[in-house]
Image (cartoon, rainbow, N blue to C red; front, side, top):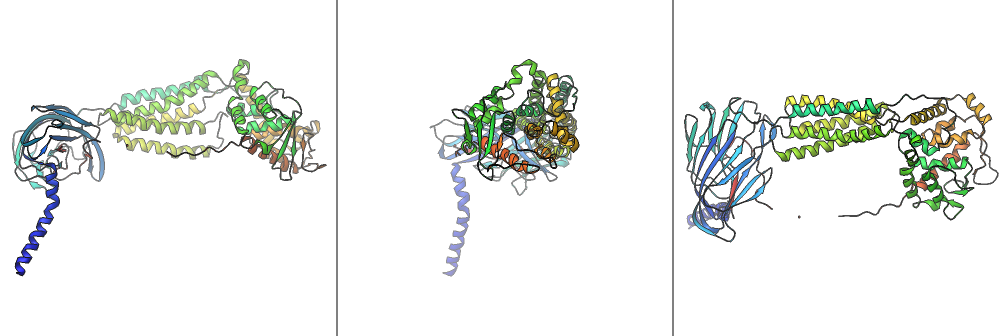
Length: 628
C-alpha cells in the first residue's frame, strides 16, 4: 500500500512539472510538423531565405504570424553593440492572404490568414524574404552567425531541414551547427559551398543556429559611410562662419576716451543696452534715480528700513525714448505720487515690456543705430547653421553601418539638440566684444569645457562611429568650437555704436580707477557728480565701486531724495546705506510679477528581437511567430 501511494505521488509530481509547458504548448493550438529552410547568401551579404512551413492546427485558429527581427544586440569581448539588418522583399509563394502588421526598427511582422476564417488540420505556408547583413566589425574577421530557426515561436517544431548556399569556399573547421541553449549537435554535411542538415528532435522556444567564422573580405558588405564627404561639407560651412566673422562681425576699432559722464542724451537704461546688447530689468530700475537727478521726480523714504518709498512726480518726462515714457506714465497714471508697496506684483509687466522695446529708438533712427544689421543677421544665421550642420554629421555617422533612414532622423535630432545646447551656452559665454560678455575667462572655460566634452562623448558613443570617422569628427569638432567663438563675437557695432561704446568704457574705467584727488576736484566743480553717475554705475554693475570712491568725500543730501525723518543729512559713506538700499527696494517693487498658477497634466505583435550569442537561437535572423 505504501509503495502504491509513493508511486501515485511521484506520478502526480511529474505531471505537475509538465503542466506549465503543456499549457504553453496548447495555447498556440498548433504544431509545426516540418519546416524546410533554403538560404542563399551572396557576396554582398544578402541572405535570401525561403521557408516552407507545415502547421498542424489541433485547435481552430485563423492562421499564423511570422515575426522577423531587424535589430540585434551582440557582445564581443565584453562590448555590446546594436546591429541593424534590414528585412526586405517579403513574398508569399503559397496561395495565402498576408497582412503586414508591424514595421519598425525592431523588426517586421506578417500575418497569414483571414479574419473570421478558422483552420483545423494541416496547412502548408511558403514564403521568402531577404535579410541584408551588415559588417559587424567582429574582432576576429567576418561571421555568418545565423538562426535557421529562432527561439521565439509559440509552437514546437518536430522536424527541421535546411540548405545553405554560401558564395565562396570556407574552412569547415570553423563551422558549427547547434540546437537549443544546450548546444545539442545537429546532423549536417558540406558539399562545396553548400551546407545541408536536419534536426528531428522537438524544438520549442529553442533555436537552431549555424555558426561560421570567415576571413575578412569574404563578404563585400555595402557601405553607408559618407562621413568624409559630409565632414568636408560641414567643415566648409563652419569655416564659412569664421569668414563671416572677419568680413561682417569683427568690431570696428573702439577708442576708449576719457569720460567723466555718460554720452550726452543717453539715459542710464540706454547705456545698459549699448554696453551689453540687450536690456536688463535693472536698467529700467536705474531710471528712477536717473529721472530724479534730472528733476522729473522725487524719492521719499516712508520708514527707517527703506522698505517702502514714495515717488512724487515733479513734471512730465522729456525723452525721445517711447519705452521710457511709457514706464514713467505707468508710474504716475492718474496720480502724482505712488508708493513702492502699491507697485508690488502689478508693475513688473510694464518693466518687462520696456526691457524688450527700449532699444527701438536706436532701431528706428538709422543715424542712431547701435548694431550693424548685417552682422546681427549673420550672427543669428550662424547660430542656426552651427547645430544643424553638426547634427547632419551626427546623422550621417549614425547610418554608417545600418543605412537605416530612421537612424538618420534620430541622429539628426540627437546631434541637433546636443549641439544646439552647446551653441546657446557658447554664444552667451564666449563673448569677448563687450556685448553680453562674460569677463571671467576662467569661468567661461569652466562652463564650456564640461558641456563640450559631454556633447563630444554623447555623439561618439551614440553613433558608434568608426575610428576614421572619430578622427574626422574630432577635427570638425575643433573647427566647430572656433566657429562658435566667432559666432558669439559677431555682433558688430556701427560707427555710432562704437563711439558710444568707447565713451561708456571710458566712463567705466573712470569709475573703477580714478584717483581720489581727481574725483574730489570734479566733485567740487560739480556737486551732483556722485548722483549723476550713480545710475550709470548701477547698470554697469559697479555701484559699490563708485560709492567707495566717495569714502572720504563729503556728499550732501540731494534735494530730490528725502530720508525718513526730517532734517537728516547724509554725508560720507552713509549715502550708500540709503540710496543703494532704495535701489534694491525699487528693483523688488518694479520687477515683481504675479506667481504663475501651476497645472498638472494610450499594439502590435512581437516584442524584443535581440538575442545573445553562443547557443542555438542566439544568432541573427530566425525570429519567431505564433498563431492567431
